[in-house]
Length: 145
Image 1 (cartoon, rainbow, N blue to C red):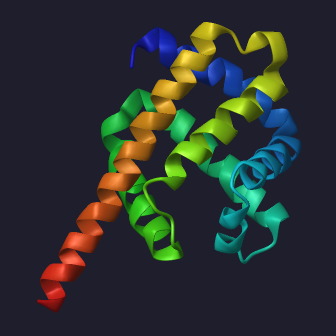
Image 2: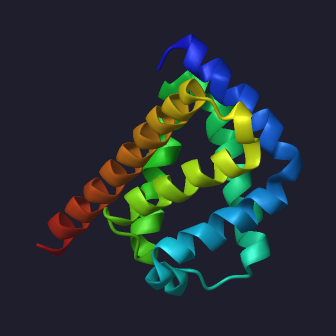
């Protein structure tokens, strides 16, 4: 990611942060519209889940300047999510819901450049999470064998 893309992510997220609760509700509504089966993965209060989501996104955005320090935490998150039943194919649906939510929340400010930067950021983090899940599964298989 370029410094310009990182700056664009930070600028656009700063515009979403004040409406974090609404953005999270819109995100989950869209996620469950795209794939209703994903609702079964969430057992906690969705308001609290939304707060966690926005906090996690905020931490990731803040850490983009120091991606090497962000990667271990993102890999761990991927391992935890695998334990909740998240599969690789779910990441595409989540990415679609995220970009759709940003487009709704930012309107005309969600330019093509912003969409590309967010897409690159999301897929970098999603692939890191998936790698963490795979490594965790491989370690578990080795421990069992």
